[in-house]
Picture 1: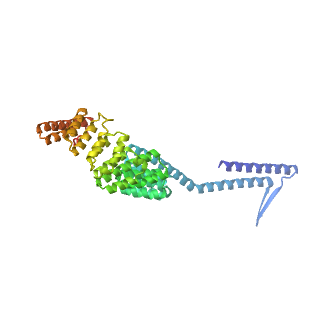
Picture 2: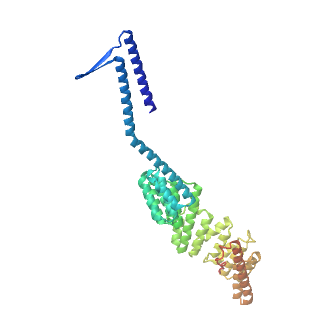
Amino acid sequence: MRKKITVLFGLLLVTAIIVVAAYRYLLMQGSLGYVIIGFGNWALESSFFLFALALLLTYLVLFLLGQAIASTARIPGIMQQRSGEQRSRQSREALIAGLLETAEGNWEKAERNLIRHVADSGVPLIHYLTAARAAHSRGAVDQRDEYLKLARQTTPEAELAIELTRAELQLSHRQFDAAIDSLAQLHRINPGHAVILRLMHQAYTQMEDWEGLRRLLPKLHQGKVLMEAEIKLWETETYSALLKERAETRKPVELRKLWSEIPEHIRQMSGIQTEYYAAMIGAGVGDEVEESVRLALGRQWNETLLVLYGCIHLTDAAHQLREAEAWIGPHPYDAVLFRVLAKLAWRVQDWNKVRDYLKQSLALEPSVEANQLMGDLLFRENDPVAACHYYRNGMLFASDEVVAQIEQNPEGSMGADAPETSVP
């Protein structure tokens, strides 16, 4: 507007200069000149100066009238623009209020603020996604899904963000099957997306779908979206759970098949090996892993492996006892070793060795199992009084262990069972 006024005054100034110059020229010539205009029977006569001045004023009036008409015509557009700006401002204010209410946990109020002016927002996606989270937090699952649907309608190019939000909310609501379906669809579109893979891992873990996790592991390797250490941790967790799952079936064929499919670097982990050995022993084929357990003990002395070795039943029990007795030299003060030797001696019915090994074990470190075995031995030898003495010691020792567990963990140990004892 200011520019137009400047141009107008410029034109007027130029016109005035021209009129003044013409007037002075005519004045020097001795005549101001005149103008006559005829309209039918009418005639208008005027001096040139007055005519030029009238023409200039007419132009000025017409110009100002045109500007007024143009301004009047622009009024609806200006009002509409101002109204749009006001609605946009209200939408921004409602978004900020909704985000604040969401942060404070006022879910219903947050929804109202977020949805009230969403039609006037330049970022409706933010409104709908935040509203979906608010609805989810107050348990309105159907309303949550409706907001996500509206988000996809208004911003179809943000499909990834919308579906990731959907899957995340489904997981937190324990809708695992629905979450897996959503994530599988996203995975087909973005096979190497780190967040998708993480959420799939989370879903499979909470579902305890270890086979699903195993199928996911190669994709984690191929995508290289996670640190190698993190992937190895997931691998260890997955194959450990699969071994425990297969152990419950007590089917050696399935255990062997799974073991052959476990990557070599995972099979080398002592914890995984121990779980496999325990599963094979539990399935009744401990003789297949006897040599592996024995060699592992030779490489690194391990109490858990030692106990497992004592649970292996070989046809040649005497040979197994001799192999185990070779460990006395390097480990002369291991109470667990002498307890295991007593169990192996029991199988070959060498009662003198059973007695000696149990005495050494009890002298080094009393245990429930050693007391029970000594009681069983004495009861077999028709000495019930002495047997009851060891049985009583074993029960007292077991009670002390339970009390110690309760003191260490008052909440978690209340329902714990007393330590189990075993017989050869």
